[in-house]
Image (tube, rainbow, N blue to C red; front, side, top):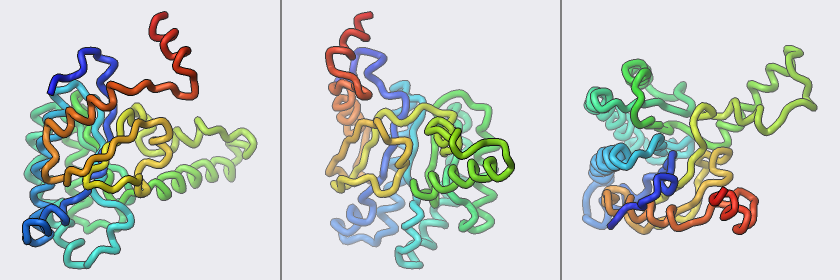
Length: 249
């Protein structure tokens, strides 16, 4: 698979819902935790592939605010895997210049996981390579709610009038407001929905769905998604003719 030859055809920011770990294990008559373990290997492959392709930001939906509804033993195993993976991977990420940050409500996590998250962010904060964003206990509704609460506090303090609030001000309080919004959204596993992921940030994102289950997602699968992205015309409300005129200007 050849890569797009134009630099502007490569997305700055790719966001992925990593779906299908459990089904991958089920089709092989293996326990679900094996699928999650293999999913970690897919994360390593995709992080490296994004670094090699000049992608600036990779956001991964690791654990949604709705995932607490899963069986308690699976949630416990996921928390343990989360901690062990952070301990094992953060130094390698740091050596490769990757900055890691987390978005979501950390308060529900065990203390040792919160500590690992804090340490990983502190270790890599000055890195200037790939920004790796992990959405954990995250939901788009939560994100917009916390942004509105922050603005409501400013209104209550008399700093802002309600009528002066703009979409830009709300966007400034949303997670990842300092990074470019996602250009490409990928969901593996065959489902075709956003599932409360980055609801505000995905307003103009190109959507790509694949039947591939996350543990089987590899460089070729990523390149297929990038090729699909490169073939699209992003208009942002303009006509196709206007976009072509802007490209030629």
